[in-house]
Length: 532
Image 1 (cartoon, one colour):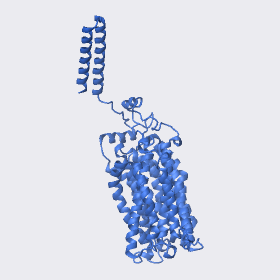
Image 2 (cartoon, one colour):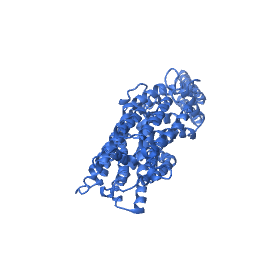
Image 3 (cartoon, helix red, strand yellow):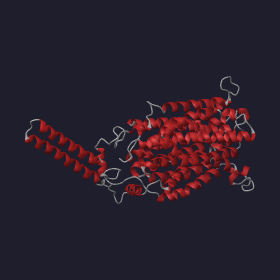
Image 4 (cartoon, one colour):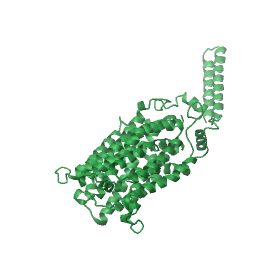
């Protein structure tokens, strides 16, 4: 159609000139010059059409480069690989289970250590134990990110899984407060899984499938944070719960909190073996971390480049505002979520006189297990469609708004009893976890779209370091504020647990405000070209 229009235009121009020539005095030379220009233009158009017919130059893949092998496999096969999703899933479950498994029994564990002077002070000491892992992770996350950028994602992941097996087992054998603190700190220092695995999830999938890859990261993380407490609730103090299997006076009676830690370490062992065969995504050939693509290089020199949005090689990541703004917002929500995880478990097992639900560890485990099951369904089936329809930031803003009134209703839920209480708190827990993970997944997507592959490990290392600092604060501050709230049950303004949930809502409200412009750009401005 375009070619036909060009011919029509040329014919019209010639006809116009001939007509003009008939009515005006022009030389034959002028007519020849005009026809020569027309001929040149037609020749140029024909050459352009021939160029457009030629296929784009293919990428050059290096034979011995593991990253090139992964990229080649992505080019040949469309759609998200179930095997790759399973790899991401098992690594994140392995990383998240040890973080959260202690919360249902931490109150009783600290009580057994005999360090708290009053019952209300137990929450404060429990917060210290919960924070040490995140403190250790904050001190080492950038180092693990740089390690994965230099030596590969695979070695960093293997070392991280090994640390889970060793130090999580030792934590279960803790006989005093300081042993628990030290083993949790070392577990955080050695657990370099989370930063590299987020970069790994981005690199294993094509650009159109990265949402489901990063959704799997946050889904597995969320499931681990929910299934972990469920395991802790069911398996802690087995002599008391299952006396016909674990007799009194046995090893399990001396170490009542070892069984859930041992089971989680046992689950991590086959993951360690499987890591031997997972693909490496980092490129090791000379000239950078990308496959050579001449056609792409030509594009990068044209106006098709997304100017100003793409992170350049060796760029100072701290000056990359799309990355840093999303990390800061992620830190705020992580502080809230970690405080919530700590407070929910401690609040649920607290007596009614302190505004709690008077749940057993089994009750807490049941509520969190139900939440985890439905969260899996949402993250793997529904979230990718929601993200495509609304975008990662817009859906995060909506869910942040819905989460605030939900959380403030918790003290009123505590006024219920019996089956009604169990059903309502289960529904509230399901909804709260779905809303929280929707926000976190959206921020994951923004962070990994803001950088190139050769800096993704370092970028995620910065993210994990900053987030770990806030997560280290979360349990300690959450536990201390819960203790303070429970000591003011008869205050005139926000009595008892109304205060702790109000304070957590203030934190979430701050994060919600920061998700709007000018602080956080929308997805159109932060989306960088993944094919650099």
